[in-house]
Length: 457
Image (cartoon, rainbow, N blue to C red; front, side, top):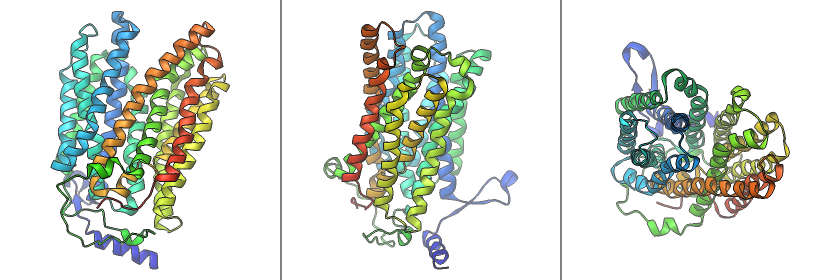
């Protein structure tokens, strides 16, 4: 009864507005605005990853048809990440200054318009480079803006599952893109993918423009009464956001760097598997991706599942006072990264598609579980500057993708020169061991330096 009363008190303190959806279709439905915001950000990340997967599929088909060499293909495919890396911190700054809701809408409109207007001609390299840079820059603003919006709307006792649901949209989007877009390319051609992505982006923008609003007051202090934390927060504090961002304090904070290190490792492992696992199947195991059917989607579906499990478990541990916020973040991060490290290291030992899919699914699934640790921690330590901290850490994550994908290519070239082909397990051991050992290192960094306490007011 006490817990129920506490929950009612939290809801009454939050003064959460209720949104009435379209009268024609949802006439009798009432939905708290923060739930609608979370749902829309989930759809947002799904659409973004459909776009990323879609470009890779459409461009690869068009480039292979035009006889483009592998080096030129790599240049075009990697251009997105350079733009993406450059706009992470500016994205957090812009969201802090003019509001995450507005920045998110403008970013979506920019990349959607670019997709709609871009002619897919593999021989017009400069045009493709400029277009992918624009899309990368635009999408680089999205995740810092999302974290700013969620920090404003979502009370602390709902943060884990809200952020986990939002980020799980990435993995569902990747899975849907892998499943549906090759068929679209087959029947309607590569250019149709760009038009479909632009239509999805425009549709989401309309929904966001219609239903998303700014909160009347921040949610960063709401719900603190149900959290087992030591630091007391004045839930009636109406102090406006500081105009001065504490850059020095942010960049010299050990808890911030604990997040940065773990974000780097997470994306190193994710991008290496996303980009090189198909090559491992084809050259390392001598398997055809077409013959594998839908099984190649399993790692991404597993990420979607485990990401949401991590969020629900984290919020349960916190609201039931089983563990403090700090211990919850450290527990889930450690379990996720250590299990993932083991699965990554043993991937080359499996010489069948089933074994490789199983290990990669476990690795990516538990990495997603770990996001209930480090990826939510932005809003624990800096609810007012969550977009800024997210921008800093996601810059590291994007650089990890660039470094990891490029380094893996060099490792495989060296292995090919030494072993004459890439069918030997030894040719791939370093590829998967590096992210495995990085997971172990990062988990210890998070154990030592992270905190669930608010350290930026």
